[in-house]
Length: 286
Image (cartoon, rainbow, N blue to C red; front, side):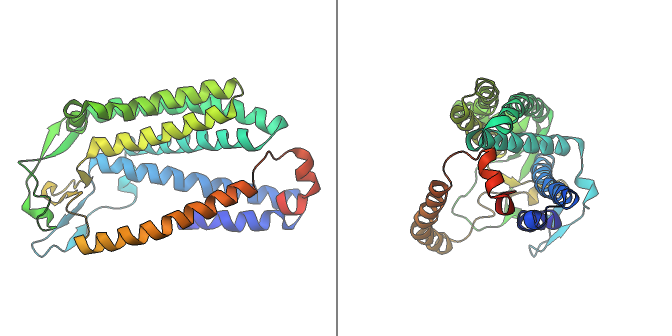
């Protein structure tokens, strides 16, 4: 995956160095792989959390991992990977609708329609599958101010346990609704040429999909498939109060700075990119 991530910045830099079609086609494929592989593997990794990861702790809290890479390529995890790929491609298509014109924009609209529907279908299938899985639940109450020791709690597997939070906290149903309706709305706005609304709908769909996964697993962050009491909850994996306070102060200082220069960058790059602008700057842009 690191090699795939490495291809993207190199590809953007080197693709336009030569006008040879074979050179540019090779870098186009490198950029495609560099975008596809991480998106797929991120989804696969998250899907494996619902199935449990083969790790455990001994009495000295030393972790051990008992699995391999190919053992993580399980059917549900691959479905989660497809959800991730479809969702991110959908969002990219809506961004192209905002930033391009002509045949590229028309193509992005068609892709947005297809991927909006695909994301909704794949997300719905994943939700049905999750409802059939054995979910993890903590027995008794959690001492949120206790030591960060995963072995002091007891965990059990419960049929359909990953959807129990939705019956306890009905407001959480907003998340899967956003994931489904946002994807379908993205498809609708794409076909109608409403690029701005398609982008908003895609953004809400992504938020809904991610929040659905988080709400379903709460309070677990990384369940264990070989020693369920080793499963990490939010409180097992948290830092100390002092560390969190330092991080909070640092975030209060630097997050506004990051947001400011990010907004400035988007403001500088505002407007649509058309064929005339690309041909006039072919060495830099194309």
